[in-house]
Length: 88
Image (cartoon, rainbow, N blue to C red; front, top):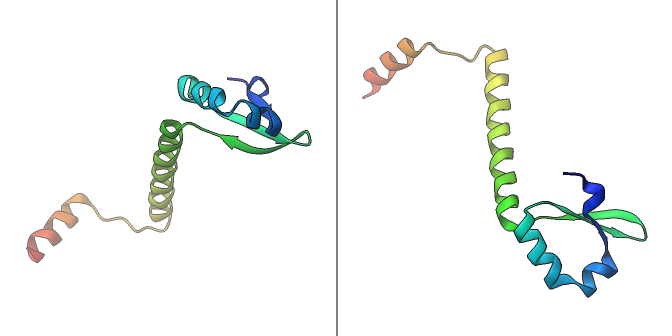
């Protein structure tokens, strides 16, 4: 996907909103909106946006896990199970 092929001006968006929304839904590719020749916004269909949010959440969890590994905040599975059994 090349974003240069997916750029529209704000005036084009205003004149062709329904068409662009159908296109976004069908292609599931982002659309860059420009104002005065400068990129100002990116439009996504709802499914792509949801997927982006899920991906971001997973990356945050992986980053947190990496940080915990680096800080030595690990416990062996055997120790964790033993502690769980004591609490239960």
